[in-house]
Length: 522
Image (tube, rainbow, N blue to C red):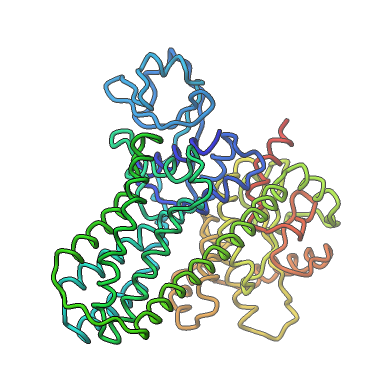
């Protein structure tokens, strides 16, 4: 499976209104030790709390296929739509699909509301707000040629935005442009193919996205500088003729799209349209030119060189980020290799006291495999790991005995600390549904550092507090168990009787549990 499968999964998620950070999804995908297998895609979806299921469907069972799903077709994932018993996928007829697919489908579970992942573009609103205010100030500062300046400023900003998106796409980054716009069989568009195709040698040497980005960046910088000295007409005079130099580049790009790649790029079209509009308005709208002077020429050179410096820094930053990302992916793939983890796990410290009778127990009490979590209600690192722990409890409660111990020091003279441990223990002892203890601990992690919010927590769970005698007796056994096993920090995790290796991120545990269980069941 290749990039084609990645695009199919993203399209499928978009069609089902499931939002993920595309950069992070790709990072998790490529960092998977089994990439580019179907398991890698399934685990990457799981990372975003998106439950996915794969099934093998025989051709005589095709009537049970859902309306929308992902299918393996000739080794690649493809989005499949089934309506009125007809299949629509990549232009294949129904009969062709069933002769070429590999009888494996992947679907996502939408029974639970997926967390909304904020687009990175949303975080740029404040920056664009500042730019808009700056331009409004410049228009008020010098109101001459207002129509021409407005059109020029808008097309410069639009051109810059799309040139930057083209730059990101060229360097493999996600953009705010919908997938259905940049890649559509109906519209015959494919931005990635246009940007990354090397069918002409000339495109091996130059990067049109960088040229466009430099062009519009220098425009914006020079527009601001010349507006401040109230000599914007000098800039228009330069672009009245200078924009003609862009026409060969525009025609070259259009020829390349129409006759060579035979696909269109909406991003390129917007950039070309912005320049053509600027060319027309600077030549059709009358303005009074000002005399050329050396200071204006120097200012124009400063603006253009400044834009060049910005682009070079951006290239260096992007190159370093790509290098760091590739290193991280290699490390991630290595770190998540189960065989290596298993070997590392076997070398760790083992429990000496394997009596779990005093633990807070969840899951299957009679399971052969166990996961033990040692925590402290005031531990910040425990708070960070706790959501992952809850996911494991929810997903593997049938296959694992899950134990929780409090690392408590009852000899401390801190009464507040002691009472929190007693109250939480009472919640476990007195609640009929033990899941309430997990929810209470999660709630405590949220309010532990904010005294003004604790009243609500106490009000909600005070019905379980009661006598402290039984709770203290149980906590003493926790204290003894932790001490006898020489546990000195929290959170600490034991898989069966082996300590989770400290070299691993605790959140990585969820990637190893499935293989651990599978191995021990066989």
